[in-house]
Length: 112
Length: 116
Image (cartoon, helix red, strand yellow):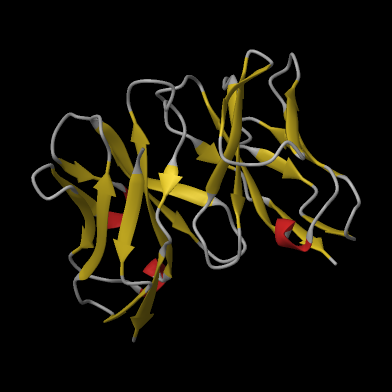
């Protein structure tokens, strides 16, 4: 049983560009959450998707957007990249809102 | 609003010694509490969770944590450290009620170093 998978593993972009990160949840899971982990910090909640809709959102600007597909996979899009967007982006999946969240290995984004 | 404070960004112990990682939380409603471990260049792995059942929670790899409501604490312990325990540990809270389900708030993390 594959766990949560994220792609790509690493990504280098320049300021002002746009980026899309992808996540496939653990089999049987229908809820996907995204977190940003800056260097030396704990993860911060970006948003959560359930039934293809954004259910909750953290304190992140509108440059951060997402999507969930019918197969429950998800994308995180970041527009107009800033240097401060450099971080490890973690995807977590769960089978319902009260279940344990299982994390992927993350995508490390570097903005130059 | 909910928050988590992990006391001590770095903890160093000798192999075989007691491990104690401290976590205090703030929540206006009964919380779910979690400890996750992160090895270098990896995602987060769940060690244990508290969900309002027994206050002493046992997790994987010999770790356990005790929920103390009066102290708003959820400290992580392991009786005997192993070299493989060296990693970064995160305490997280998920406040029940309202729209906070499934929105984890993490502490800043504690890096555990284990010396031979």
